[in-house]
Image (tube, rainbow, N blue to C red):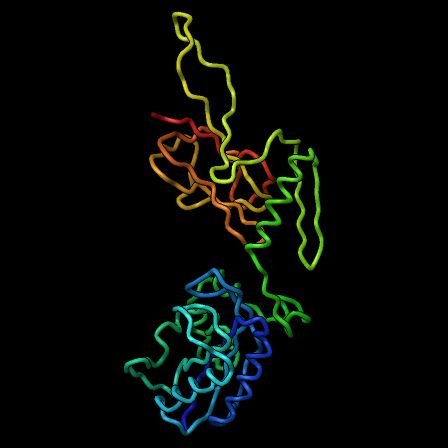
Length: 312
């Protein structure tokens, strides 16, 4: 008998029950001697999809590595998996993470799994039931390990039994509508709480018009400089980039600083709202005159973020 380490994952709407059923189904391929708790994790490789539920199991089996892989693929199909794109969403995923101490490189079968050392979502549950993987887990950054949490800690005991998939596109639309209504009505605070979606927009002052949809930019009127002969110089006004949604500002890397020269298309930062990334971009030549916010700072709709001096 061999000892196989099996990774199980799903990001379907009912991911937790699917993973539980898959763990039970492994008993048809041998003896499940241990299994981990359920963990929640962010998707790996392709971020634009729901979070995953992951687990690991130790399986004593008489099947060869290739026969075990074939049997796991059959279980995936039986549990609703259909082909998608690479690293895409899946109803169920069953991987051989390791098979005894065997090292194997065959077409479609690498043992140990070739990316096991990079994947916290696989190593965290595996190290829970097999201490020999604690050293490999320790090689990951604390940030990577902290993103994989027991499901009851990550999404609460109730949602651990039933995953909720959020329509982010529709949620972002509601955020924009709320922000625009708040601006047009001159409100300082506006809140929506319905169908499990909570949106709150706060403004420091009424806005006179709606935000631009694409560039988030406004020009700040300023007195034109006076030349030595008393003539007004033809100097462009600074352009201010503003937040068009309420959220948390994240500076893009490398972070811009005051005095930095810009040339061409560049993302300066993004505002994270309801899990959606809303980029703040500059296009053309210019110099960063002011940075009004810091990384990780909450920002309101219409709040100035950067001032840019345009250059011809």
